[in-house]
Every structure is written in structure tokens, then in C-alpha cells.
Image (tube, rainbow, N blue to C red; front, side):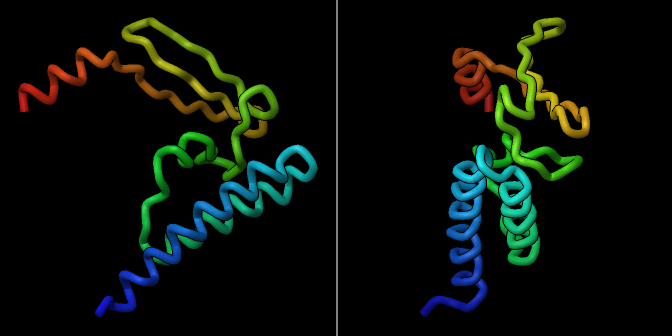
Length: 114
């Protein structure tokens, strides 16, 4: 028999997926509604103590909690100063998110070392 907390977390994960899909679909017609879906998604995740999956977290601005769609309200650049990075710049609040780009060979080497 499953405990209530496990069931609650599963329901929260399902709702997070549903809300993100709704936000992506409604962004073109109503961006404010899409941002509201993102806010609800974050509140559900915090209440149920569930992490938002990385595939969704990449497209959410930490500062203004808006959905980041490249070319619409987000600028994407590839920089290679000290290593290759992808930067997402939110055009609503000008916050910057940087993600390193790692080659597959280095990932395999890190796995072998550990």
C-alpha cells in the first residue's frame, strides 16, 4: 500500500507536466496566462517538495518566473571564452542563465574516474 506522500508527489509531477505543456501551447496567444501556468507549476512543486525536471527548468526564468521561448522573449547565444557555454537572456528582466556544454568524451571519462 502506498503512502499518501508518495501519491501526492506523483500527482504533483503529473500536474507539473500538464501545466508546462499548457504554458507552451498558450504562449503565442496569451503570454500572461502562460506565465501564470508557470507560477502555478512552481507553487505545486514547492508545496509537494518535488524538483522541477531539468527539461522544464531550462525554459523558466528564475528572476521573473516567465516561460522562456527562444526568439520570442529569450535570446540564446553560444560563448566559448573559458569553455563552451550556452547563455539564455530573458528579454523581460534581462537576467542571464549560463549552461556549460560538455562533450560526450569528457562525460565518459568522468564516469570512468568515479
